[in-house]
Amino acid sequence: MPSVEIYTTPSCPYCHAAKRLLDHKGVAYAEIDVSRDPGLRQAMTVRANGRRTVPQIFIGARHVGGSDDIHALDHAGKLDPLLAG
Image (tube, rainbow, N blue to C red; front, top):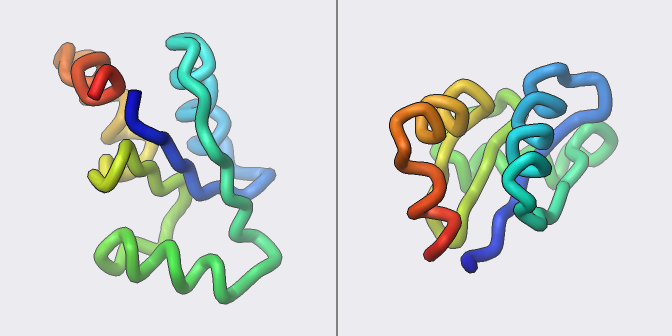
């Protein structure tokens, strides 16, 4: 299973929705809180090709996008294969 990283802030409802989906699937993930560290936010923005909103989700080396993106992948049946590696 590839590693999963999710960049978040504590008060973001979209972050909570994305984490709920991952939790429901039993996926372990590393959560990176960018709310108090401009350097982490900048690193996230670079890694996410300029996207500054949270969450930003990575499965392995692949940038999946945000909450809407990961939910769309799930509804299309494409998320589980990504998570399986």
